[in-house]
Image 1 (cartoon, rainbow, N blue to C red):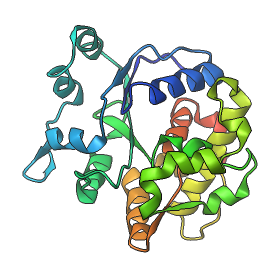
Image 2: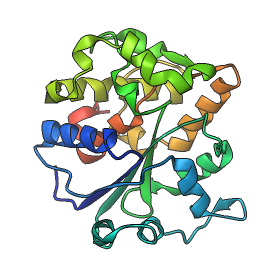
Image 3: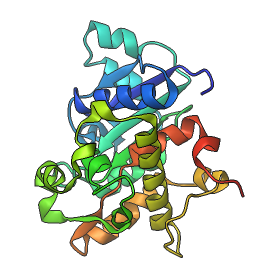
Image 4: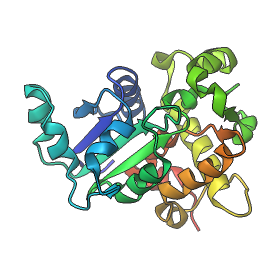
Length: 247
């Protein structure tokens, strides 16, 4: 992985930092030093970023967070970074859920070297382990009903395989398998042919997170959303040739 100074802005105070630590150490042998935990849903954050119903084009995520940060977090946020990544859950059951605003946010936060790049997990982070095995082809069609999102963690605990419940046992092979599963499923959702193949680097770089959300919102009208963990696409941003096929 090339030298970068990366800031991760995450929703939770425990699950996301712990997951990032294990993933980055396993795949790249590095410790993610700069992780800022926002502590609540993306929908509250978007209220701060909004002016007249749209994302303020001058919105500075680090500056906004520093207004409410403690001394240590403010110092972390004040540093200069080459990349900023935002990691949040869809949380469609949240009282502040605004699909159009979330769509606008994904268009705004689309470049880690500029405003930052946002990953939205469907319906939440725990989707990474909603598998019967690491070779679970049924994952390509796995969905969760709208009314079941509130109890999604419980569902994953019952339906997920035992070997994936303990994050401390994940190896680089585990994460590589998870990356490829979610690459294939995202490719399936975004392409008209609906075939779950590994994309090329050119195709991957052309992906638009707002288009994934658009597909999910259409499915929500039918009563469900696809289980999808887009955080597992983050390692591809660091090492595309490791995960993507050549044209």
